[in-house]
Structures are given as structure tokens and as C-alpha cells.
Image 1 (cartoon, rainbow, N blue to C red):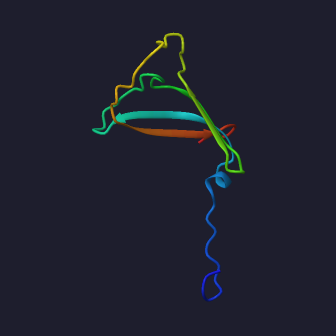
Image 2: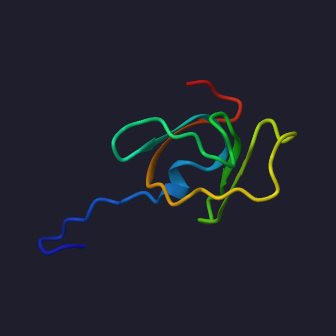
Image 3: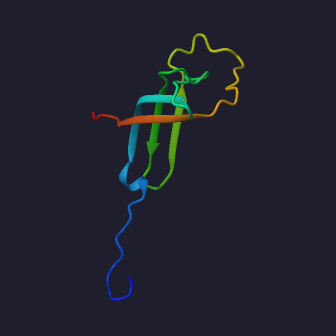
Length: 94
């Protein structure tokens, strides 16, 4: 409670708002100048799974969709990038 008997608004933790399994819908990598920069290890269309537990634990896995041609050693080369990820909850659309 704060002074005056009013309760402070409750702030929901992310784990309380997003429990469940999420599938990656899209991913965009870009340089700081805004140019597309495909991830050399994952490509432009990776497969990804994100799991949030109400306890606060989470797990995320990314992998290249077509892994048949993955080289043994690839360096990202130190290029600064930004990533935009879009997720959808498994079993739901939107």
C-alpha cells in the first residue's frame, strides 16, 4: 500500500501474461542502416519454438529450416544487426 491507503497497481510479469508454447511467425534481420541482413547460420526463415512457464522459466530454440547445406563453421563476421521477431501462440492465430 502507498500513503493514503491506496494500493499500487499490480504489474503482471511476462510469464503470467504469456504462458504456453509459441511458434515463430517471422524474423527480419537488418543492419543498423536498415538493410536486410540474413543470418548466416539460420537463414531468413528459421524454425523457432518459445515456451513460457508461469513459474518464470522459459526456453527458446532456433534452427535453420533447411539444414542440408549448413557449413561446419560459419562466422557472423561482427556485422551489427537488429532483429524483429513475430510469434504466434501454438493453436491460436493472429
